[in-house]
Length: 253
Ligand SMILES: NC(=O)c1ccc[n+]([C@@H]2O[C@H](COP(=O)([O-])OP(=O)(O)OC[C@H]3O[C@@H](n4cnc5c(N)ncnc54)[C@H](OP(=O)(O)O)[C@@H]3O)[C@@H](O)[C@H]2O)c1
Image (tube, rainbow, N blue to C red; front, side, top):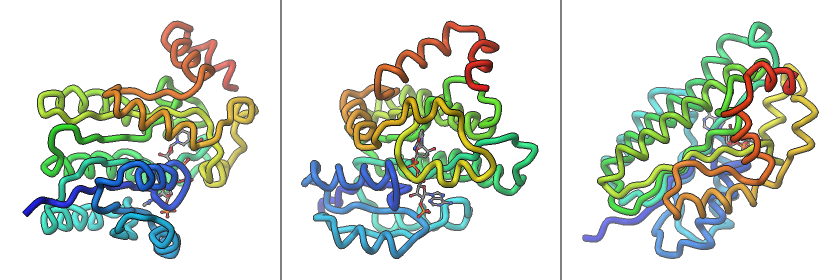
């Protein structure tokens, strides 16, 4: 029997993950199912009513180890062909880390790095030639960021991990792309600005999330390991490679 072809999307209830779900739903009719992960089951149900594809709703909190193990169990039971894994769940907190709760910082690492790594690994046995891993990093991955310290470090991890994974998977014909957006109009900043407003540069560079997702999907299909949307962020990427870190820090302050 032919294995069902699926896409797994984390962070499917909001922002980039939600838009990715809608785009895959519109453009990939050959997928048999979309597996949607997010904590808010009411939002997942509303979404599944709007989508053309059959869905599997997985209302898991990804900071919890037992939920990651349950995901592994679901994959083992259903043995799907995972054509896309989109790791979009994540959050950040701006401000001095000294003023933030250690539990929240650990949770950020758990969701942004630990869950993303676990799911990437758990899905690999079910990914064959031409499958795609799409991991949401950020432009914050390109340099350390005072007052966004832990978040930037988690995204540096995602970028580094995804680049290496893409290399490891080359022979298998599976491609991994790290998506590195600048500020985008999602719910991200509602949570991120709990302690402190982000710098004013945020509004200057704000883009709509749809364009980021469109570019990310295109770059993933083109087998690119990194996806950066827009000229300002591409310039930022280059500047972080050539400018002294002190100068960049003074710009961000
Ligand atoms: N927006 C930006 O400016 C920006 C820029 C660069 C990178 N990014 C990255 O893009 C990714 C998506 O962010 P977004 O902008 O789309 O933000 P968003 O609108 O706030 O969406 C975040 C998503 O992550 C999920 N999530 C958070 N904690 C979770 C947990 N413990 N378990 C399961 N799911 C969890 C949320 O679902 P539930 O609440 O239902 O759990 C939600 O679907 C993140 O990795 C973020 O770091 C965002």
